[in-house]
Image 1 (cartoon, rainbow, N blue to C red):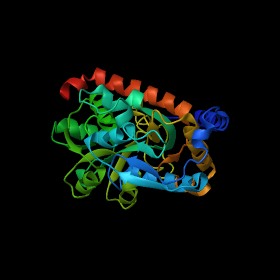
Image 2 (tube, rainbow, N blue to C red):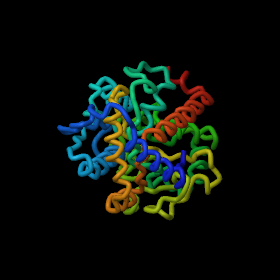
Image 3 (tube, one colour):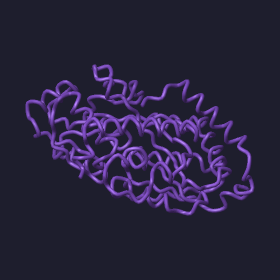
Image 4 (tube, helix red, strand yellow):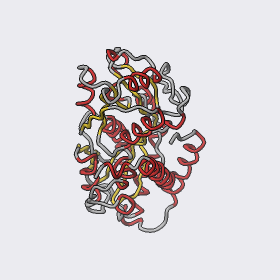
Length: 331
């Protein structure tokens, strides 16, 4: 889902108003935080989510007066780290920073979850919006999305396409791409994107949907090739990369959010205090520039609009799973 500027502005305004005016429970946040806050990142170090977590927590620390400590807990398609936060004490000292997968995708598949996404978390803030790219190894010899589709059709099931976590948002994007473009590939699952990037660079993997931060240097150096972005508009850091919509594939448009969530029973006064701190990073020009250079967009969207975004994505990804009968294939 692409989020337009008016919605971001409205969301930020509502965010600040809610954080400033929310009544009740003020005593719960009076001395919060008085120790460092753990941020569980359910993927490995160096992944796009990890990078976004580190730069946004660094920026917000000065507004909250405490350190954020990043803990990478990869595994089970991000469900391991999410479960840790769902079961954490509801005191505001353990947050989850994640891409959509464990919150809006995992529930549509039959695997047993150690948490209930819709009940065990409450939204705190979106940190950044992170466009994804269709990336190929240069030696594959394709220069466009149409060229990739044609190559895949001419070599059915022979191209290898990396997936970071079966049943994740990138997997569903690939399933939608395959269905609408009419091709097949050999899907290769990875627990962490860093290993997939190594395999792309070594010509052991043909293609993958990836976010920008961990591959920006490889794109700039010509070691990887971006054929298109799934973003609704071109990325300022990669202006020559067309959007899928420009190429006649608007159904592929979707921006991935990286956001902070807390256990559902954390007091609202603490959520509001966190909200005030995250709202202030919007006016940090150095942070905005750093995020833009990584190919992402700074977007501290607060609890009400983040909740709407989560529900919209839950519906969108659920439809992809249902239309493709994907839940049955994961049994």
